[in-house]
Length: 398
Image (tube, rainbow, N blue to C red; front, side, top):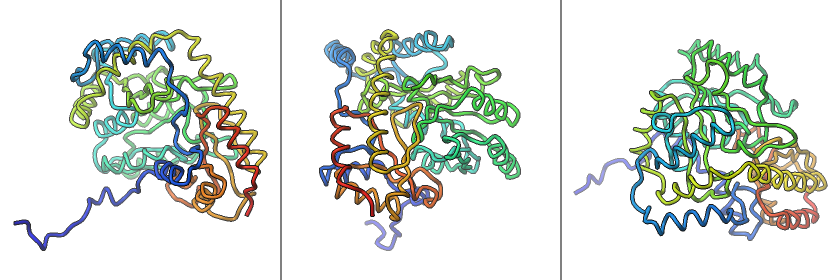
């Protein structure tokens, strides 16, 4: 018989973070029949060629476990892609781990490299998973602000101050770098990457990158992996995946590129978290990654048009916006429209205008820092975005 007096409780870790606000907004959008510009998944079909490749893989009976750290064909295709796009020679046998999305790639990497009580720097505003990831690992997040007045750039003196403060408490173990950035759309400049690299070399911390939007950039901005900078290959963990580039967010295919000794640790954690990513979809991904350069150019151009359309719609509705140079999100200031909090405003937007966004406070360590901000995504058809414009013309001010 169970002890009837035993205390029923959840872990302290689980009590330190909330459920995903982004997914909560999706549920509210579904309940009210709103257009979902909250969660970053496309409402248009995935490319035909990747779906055909998945069908073929299933018919060819790639339906049992793949090698835990990834199908050899997929790891080889990833290595070929990095050689082709960046001139980066990656060893598919010793330096690549295929995971269940970039999300699992990140938590596997943090658990493999960070011990409890060690410190991890996180730029803010940040993608909402990074805070809970550090909590689950027992690590201590150190938040480094991005400057909205400078189009979400970071100040070198600010990050160096945070690192010195961390050093006084035992040192910084890693920095999480997301570029192109969600939620701000910033593509960090070569100078910014070199500044981070210099600090990493000098203070001896890892850089764990989230580069899932690497092929979605605009206005002459280009993604550059920080691992390629001098002295950074051995201290960088590079994370990317298939979901955003090929519009298959439900396939959950991501990967980690890291030095062989770090890869060994990441593979062990990955194995016991998820065993492995879906086998037939890995074979389809291997075929997709060999697509020509025209695909990537068209991808970025299509998203640029959607970006420009939604920017115009939001500005006409009275939002202050920042033009993103990468990814597919727009941060918007609501201060000229309402004196409501971001959460109140977004819930009213869903109920009354039928448009869902994400409250800005979910991207900050302290909610008050994001109370006048909301985030919209434009990974939707132009026809749906035009419908957003019609709905927002009803008027938002309060």
